[in-house]
Image (cartoon, rainbow, N blue to C red; front, side, top):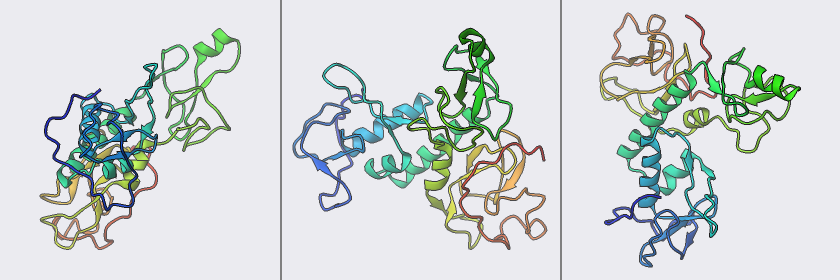
Length: 272
């Protein structure tokens, strides 16, 4: 559980009809100040914007990119429901500075996870690689031999595989979602301070070469170098710097193709 908050600085607007307010203790801190509004999360537990912000920040500091509910029942069982970043951002009342902090950290953590060539099999915990970056269904040779039958697991949710195969989006286990793709879909937009006319650019991008997620500090030129594959690309139009339409006109001018739309998929390593 998060530590008790001493001086709440964030407060819900009681006129916000998009939130469901409840009159019961905060399920993260246990605090029960009647003058402080609590909102109900999608799992049914109550939070304040302060407790939600600090709990999710603690998870990020622990290098966890999934926001899960820490509330426990009378038997001590943790809820564990995963909250989307979109829900956390809204109900935590994240400031613009906190949004940048959260999105930058999430992008970094996703990239660390996705750059790994191996993941632990949920059956035997041995490290297993997958044969194709476009197929989430992974065959574990050791478990299959031990069980005397085919054993497969999902590269994304790390549970025994359910459903048809091959698939690149998800398996049929409940809650199997691509959190990195959700961040690309729901991240905020930014404007560049030194590139005239570039506004409403998604704040998180997937490298067009390897798919690693990255952010831009909004200063200097449009280009950014991927920390994973070391390729340089334009954060605005998503082309490699050598292919950007404005490479001969300066990196501080808008791209003739404009701002590339939000990405709906994460590129696999192309080896360019």
